[in-house]
Length: 608
Ligand SMILES: C[S@@+](CC[C@H](N)C(=O)[O-])C[C@H]1O[C@@H](n2cnc3c(N)ncnc32)[C@H](O)[C@@H]1O
Picture: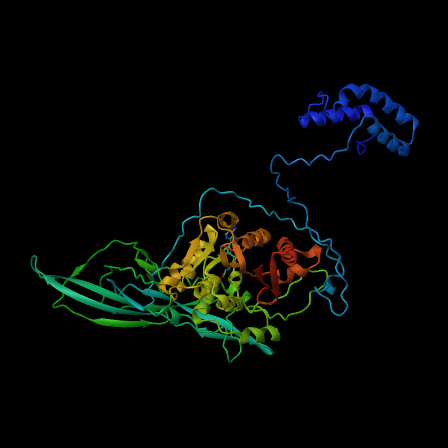
């Protein structure tokens, strides 16, 4: 009674009455402790008004006590109400998470490290972390079925033979294409040297045969002369057709291919033997090798011309043409059929400009420049810093097939403008992933972002023999795995290959939350290497939900080429998101994590 507000006793009694009503207490019962409410309301109203106007607070308390005695009221403790139904705690989604706990001042050394000095011009304020811990998408379906893809490719050298009829008047012009690959060697304190290597070539040979067949009609005897030219194309084995180079020699310095192939053309003219008479291309068999697609175009109809000779003549002429990696065979005479061989997938026609601009730029690891976006090159592709080169070159060498895949990624065609082979994970990170995976052989692995599959194959090699590797990729970019990565997946055993579950039916923004909703806490290992860095914060949250306690998460490209250290004015959007993610990981009580300045910046995160 005395705890209630004292301003207006009348309304106070009204309130009590309401309470009693809600508690289902009958205040009209004479025995009820609330029975005074009904009769005393008006009386107390008057007393209340009097008290309010006439006396001070202390006196009010005394009077209240007297009134209690007067009406023989006992103070009873009312049991707290049990909540009628569960009310979930509402977590603010957009509010920034801030740490309010004051950090003790370090005495001996500073940890975590202080803000770098180079950002003094505009001190970077803390960027609010806006992340939504709830799944964005709710799906009722179960996990989508695994799509397991197998590739079967042949890599043996192949020879194809095409036969055609031709004539001496016809000048057959062969455009031969030489591929030269420039690549540079660089290592600590050694200037860049550029070497040019001739790519092994395909040889084409012409064998011309003329057969004259007599046949009898009327006098005189008529014979048909038919000239056949055989074009034999020999394609060397793919692996030999590409220049050999190594990324991680264990004993010598790193030797990195940095340039793309330059294609130059030369022409040679061949006049077939004078015996050849007929201008007829009789038969053209498309040369289909595993590496080539051949298109055959005919622009003239087949004709035969009969001439009179005494006896059949057979002659063979051989024209070796070398090099002809991508031969164009056609006639100088209009209307003569020609053959165009489509270019090999891994050998795109690359303009001189691209080849020249792709020569390596040597970056030394350095501090950032004030008033600019910070750009630090740390990847083995880019740095010539002695420390990093030493570390990278002394790391265990990744196997040849991963080097081959990297090389094919470098020369792969049809890369959209915004993707280059630089999007590929670096070999040193694949090495790091494999080393960590060897420690505890995870069973259920997830690779977010596949591209040509360098990381995916690295993971597939180390996954436990009973495990699986789920790989998420955008449908629009799945082509790189299909066309480049899968070719190299043949080095995996059939069981290793069958462990890869490629999911490319929807974008990561959809597939990852769905997976996190359906299969939380089930993955032993997650490799996050998404191209869309603006999703990194969300991806991190989903990845943490997916990983079991004790599981491992590796995040590639966590420094965004140093951009995360820029002052706020010079940050790109991606820099901001990755910086927020880094802050989030630093503050995340669920994990224990280390950020290494290795590759493009690598997070090693374990879930507690
Ligand atoms: C940096 S690359 C991954 C490199 C790869 N981990 C490797 O081992 O070389 C990023 C990949 O994420 C994919 N990606 C980007 N945005 C995506 C999205 N929204 N959904 C699905 N995949 C996406 C891109 O297609 C690209 O292949």
